[in-house]
Image 1 (tube, rainbow, N blue to C red):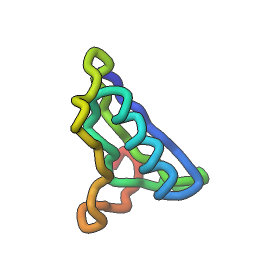
Image 2 (image 1 turned 180 degrees about the vertical axis):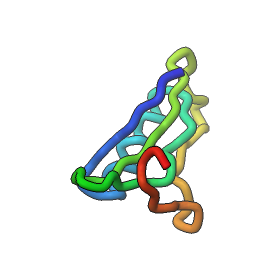
Image 3 (image 1 turned 120 degrees about the horizontal axis):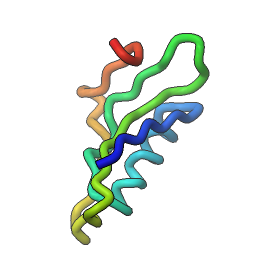
Length: 75
């Protein structure tokens, strides 16, 4: 199991990048995005199990908009 934090210029890019990792390995999918004050961009986190590839029919989707929260990293 590994934890990947992806930071990109915008939420859509960060979420898509983390979701694409789910095509390679079994994944939790992208977390709710967060912005770290004083740092550019938006970050998302994904947990990946490198020992297992995802099932052929398994797709990883970003959290629905209603479950996304803007938060300060580490709080």
